[in-house]
Image 1 (cartoon, rainbow, N blue to C red):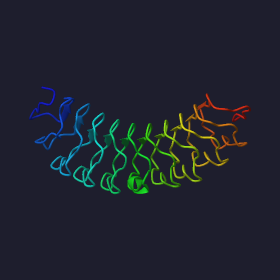
Image 2: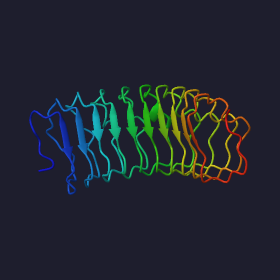
Image 3: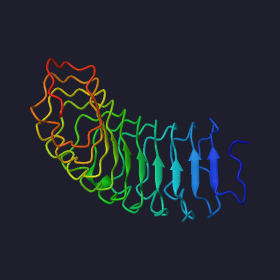
Length: 239
């Protein structure tokens, strides 16, 4: 059976399409759980109780619309959380309060409209943040400021028409920024100034008509710049 439990196993995988309740009775030695491509719509607040060694939680391609506030409290060692392709329109304010070791957070393919600063407040170890394919129309200034270890930020395929001043403030380790497939029409001259380590910048498939002089000058390590499928008539490339 795809959801069978083995007493000595440290990794539990379930891809049973009809599964609608979160598995119980997992051994306390469990380090990774994958419940993906199922009919799971809710997860009880105590689902992860008794799993103090859990490092990876993969819950992609389910039907989750809400998560309980205290879901991750019993798993302070969590490193990876994947919630790709669910129905999440929001997350509890304190959902990540106890997961300060989180390195990999994937929220791609949900219905998020607004980012709450409280989500990122304690995630100073986060290296990978994927927010692609949501319904974001704006990103608040300074929202990513605590993410001093972040190396990759994916905001592609949202509904961003502009980037707020200070939106990228604090991301001094960022190497990859993906803004493909938004509705960006203009960018402020200092947009990318907070990103001295940036190597890869994806801006294709937006509505950019012009770029401010020197906008890419702070990006001394820029290796890849994609501006395809915009409305640019002239282009000043970085030296």
